[in-house]
Amino acid sequence: MRMDNSGYMGIDKSIKVRVQIGVRKPLMRKLKIKIRGGNKEFFDVKYEKPPLFCFCCGLIMHGLKDCNEYKEEDDDAL
Image 1 (cartoon, rainbow, N blue to C red):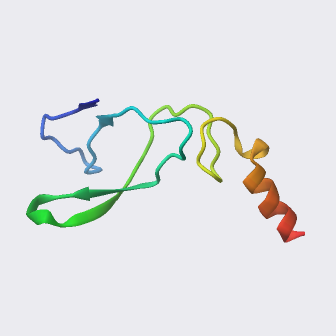
Image 2 (image 1 turned 180 degrees about the vertical axis):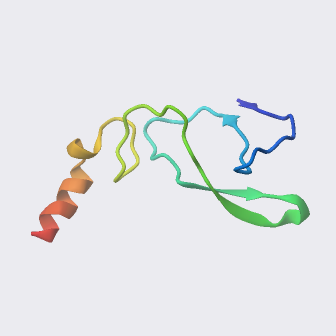
């Protein structure tokens, strides 16, 4: 939707981008971006003020304690 196009990268070499995301898909941890020269690189994604979401499956609709995938992993460990 919107990008800070001032061309300035801070100390942490980051750029803020505002995007719309579907809530039925997991949040991305890394993003593959084509940079100058046609090369593609992976970059870590950081979310600012995210809503409640699950750290196991990445979905926004529930937290870790309510995640079926997390509970299945926990049960397998027993």
